[in-house]
Amino acid sequence: MRKKRTPQFSPDLPFRDHTIYHELYSVSQWLDSCPQFVDWVFDDLNSQGTHHTGRNALSAESVLRIAFLRQRFQFTFEYLAFVLVDSPLFRAFCHLEDGQTPRKSSLQSLVCSIKASTYHRMQLAQLQTAKEQKIETGRVAAVDSTVTASNILLPCDSNLLATSVKEMCRLLKLGQSLTADPLYRFTHHKRVIKHEAKKASYAKKKEQQKQHYKKLLQVTYKTRKTLVKARFDLENALKQEACHDLRFRFLET
Image (cartoon, rainbow, N blue to C red; front, side, top):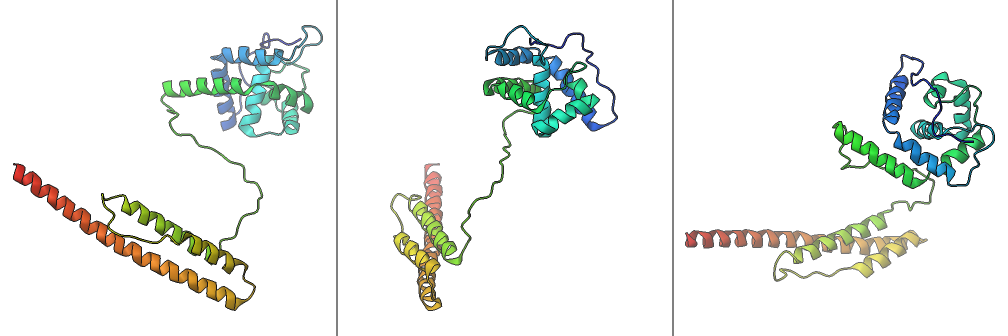
């Protein structure tokens, strides 16, 4: 039989002169001020067809606090079971009654029963509280990604040269759109650099690799020269256009 809240439980935590105590005390008060969280978790736990008979199970309030405790300190379920047996502070925070010592499998089943939509609703409520207290606006989100081992292509000179040519060609194409009529023409060496970079990477002999790198360098220097000239032409055209607009405004006045 599961209850929503632990009956006749003191909200006070055993005092510890530590930052973790002050954090848990503040969180405990905030959870007490949001009783709707317990109702949401209770509905999730009862959605799997639980019976209203048998021994007393963990209350929905305790499950909610255990889920927060695990998320906050990134405990494994095995270590979480040990902490809830060993630490009076954590037991008091989770509102565990005397004799309640949940095991790893039970904790995993209960915490995983809380739906993602319930967590989302609690996060929205937390964000609303932060806005009211002028702590956080929620306009910027920080995402923490887990680093996993994967095959990464090592940066080689041929790929770096090919990427630089692609970027310069992108800038040249962008420069053509700055004026009504393009001031210059250029050749996009996409196929050439792709072919030469691939051949340079897989060449077995140094002489063959040297020839492919030579071709890549020629295309790179040629594209760079075109880009420098295009920048000079665009700057002059924009200056002339600005002077023309200034003269036109002067004549109007």
